[in-house]
Length: 389
Ligand SMILES: *[C@@H]1O[C@H](CO)[C@@H](O)[C@H](O)[C@H]1NC(C)=O
Ligand SMILES: *[C@@H]1O[C@H](CO)[C@@H](O)[C@H](O)[C@H]1NC(C)=O
Ligand SMILES: *[C@@H]1O[C@H](CO)[C@@H](O)[C@H](O)[C@H]1NC(C)=O
Ligand SMILES: *[C@@H]1O[C@H](CO)[C@@H](O)[C@H](O)[C@H]1NC(C)=O
Ligand SMILES: *[C@@H]1O[C@H](CO)[C@@H](O)[C@H](O)[C@H]1NC(C)=O
Image (cartoon, rainbow, N blue to C red; front, side, top):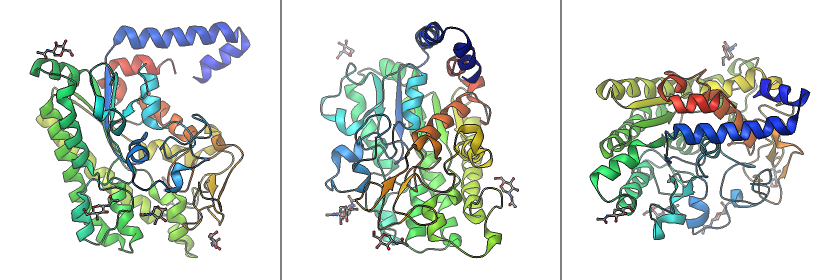
């Protein structure tokens, strides 16, 4: 991107941009590896499911300045603009993936061109009732990963009608499973459980993700991208809640809380072990671990390189305080306000990332640099596409 852009500015920007656009269209069309995207997850991926279906319309992320950068109004996305899933769709030359709640009543092969997004803000990997029984309140949704998969299976007959065309549909789709599981941990931590207790959730979360992947493979999925957790010790919500004068708890170069990042790494290690296990059992399936953790960690280590000159551990939009996060004055409420230029911040609202950060994550990951195994090796058309971006 950088090289092409600098070339463009030194010669003819108009021509160069035209060339770039047509190359992108050419590659997307010519390789045509993916006809659609099916996605599952939480607020990192929800493009409108909770917004359209929630009985409660007063959640703070349903109000401006959510959406201000790109859509110019709230869409139910937890950011100032596009999410990772939107940038993936753009890179693949597909339309933005439509939320399930928008298409479910009139789904047909024609009107789900591009795929369907089942992700819901607040969703957990584990069953909501099970978590409620453990005392972990979920204020947003009961639509856990299992529920989302159930929706998918219910919808499938209106998208394909024979086992051969269902197989064709799924094998030509990119299936994004996650990020999911961080709410299982968040809800427990915010409910006051300690990290040792929350650590016992990890195998349960991994089991849920694993069984969803296995079901999807059985249905015919061939390319599955499975993201890990983010470095949650860098999130303003946690930096605020677990603020301490003990400097030893912070990473001196990033300012993030070590113990929470270690926890996220632990989840990610366990997830990768399980993904390798599934991969060995299904050598003809591509299971790609998307390393969100390390992609984002690059931003905290070298923020200037990515243009994050406004803040790393401080949110763009919030109700004040050292990390600009206040749970009683969240982004979207009257008491909160947003920074001038969200692209200068990694974090948007204390929990989620800015559009600029999401855009970088997709660039970093689709170039295959930080992926094990690299998307570039396993999914050739993604590689060809991303070499232009
Ligand atoms: C709706 O959400 C708001 C904001 O989170 C909350 O204060 C309120 O209690 C919720 N209302 C209902 C009926 O759950
Ligand atoms: C989740 O389910 C429980 C029990 O069925 C219900 O009482 C609660 O309102 C639901 N929560 C949400 C956010 O839908
Ligand atoms: C199956 O679906 C295809 C594509 O939507 C359609 O053209 C065809 O008529 C359907 N066949 C049956 C038997 O429903
Ligand atoms: C800070 O974090 C980076 C990786 O995220 C790590 O390499 C470094 O060792 C950490 N520093 C300390 C003091 O923990
Ligand atoms: C958080 O916001 C509330 C509501 O605006 C305010 O009363 C409170 O003082 C704020 N807390 C901090 C620590 O700034």
